[in-house]
Length: 174
Image (cartoon, rainbow, N blue to C red; front, side, top):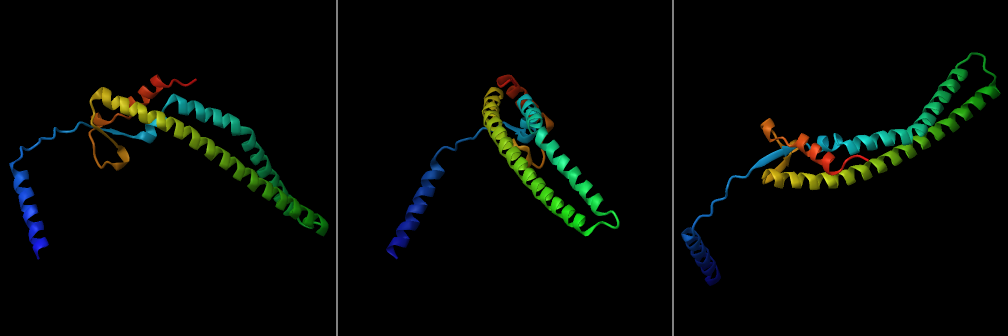
């Protein structure tokens, strides 16, 4: 009982003291909006990296397309009437082998592309974060909110294009 009375007394005392302290005013915050995904995807560095990746993986993509064509040819051959039993089994074996080869190539290509894309996006994302912080300081912005978390904003608050331009200036594509 005594501890309960003591807790209530302390609570009343702290409220009384707090009500006599001068109120601190918090100035209004200057807010901006950014579409970070768009800002990153529009940088010259990302555009250059995408073109380089397309060139790098183009031969593997062409190999996949070639195997897909081979599979279509095998299917056409298998669809011909009066196929000899030995030939049908041979075509089925070829088809199965090509299908496994295609699946392996597709998986390897996808894994390599995904890994490289993550490396590039991680690198550019970290640099973009620094650029956005600098842009906020330069423009006197207190908080920048990602557009995906925003229901409405005035277009004048959007820093996406400015962030992309600042990034391209700070990190020109080589």
